[in-house]
Amino acid sequence: MNKLKIVLGARAKKHFLLGFAKGGGQTDASLGGWKPLSAKYSERKRKDDKKRTILVDTGDMFGAIHNRLNTEGFSVYVADLEYAEYHNEGTDKMPQREFIGESDELEEASLKKMQEEIDKLFI
Image 1 (cartoon, rainbow, N blue to C red):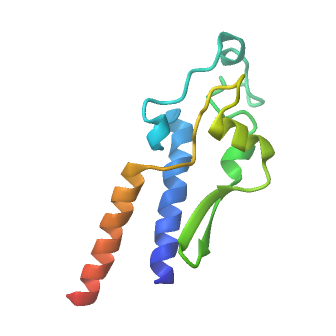
Image 2: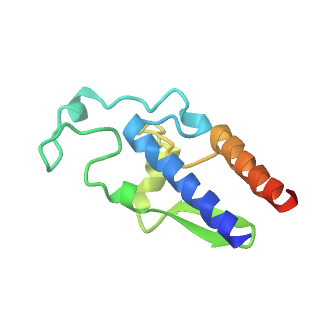
């Protein structure tokens, strides 16, 4: 059972990380993608001189996404980054760019994987 939790947790983490490359669309709230950067920020360059993408500047938020086993299964969370919540939930002055949250696509893939593992036990 723990092996399945580890596999599902790793898949969930990968699913949400993919949103950074795609510009959103990995949660039900961000299916249409994240709101584009304003003109002020879209022209700003990252430290490595590449054009900045949404929610990626230093890479800190991307690197702070972890998964952890628990009694119910696993959780995917952002460790020690206070501003991540503001991006994920949005504020009065900042649009919501949810990168971790409910995902029908992820749930469907997880249920399929669980069924495959259950079928292996009875075959």
